[in-house]
Amino acid sequence: MNIVLLGAPGVGKGTYAEILSEKLEIPHISTGDLIRDKSKTDENMKKIIDSGKLISDDQVLDLLKEKLKEKSAKNGIILDGYPRNVQQAEDLKKVVKIDKVIYYVADDK
Image (cartoon, rainbow, N blue to C red; front, side, top):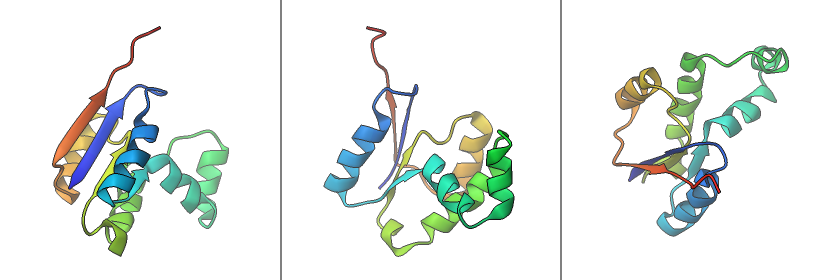
């Protein structure tokens, strides 16, 4: 099962992703974590991050494609906070079938 968790920062996506990951025995994938991990070995990506610029949608999608090839993702994944816009959603649909999308909302209080 492939699940996408969406919502504002701090609403609990990461927390629930970890819980679901454990219960469903599928990996929790945060694109932010993928980018940070890749920047440790990719000097070009490190330069982009260090300059305060954003990683391109194509680069993020490539990182996600790499992760989807891993054995741990064969039974599904939980995406935390990705996609963030319509274009990313359209691109994601070309790469993986999404079974569930959960949108988290928290009261302002």
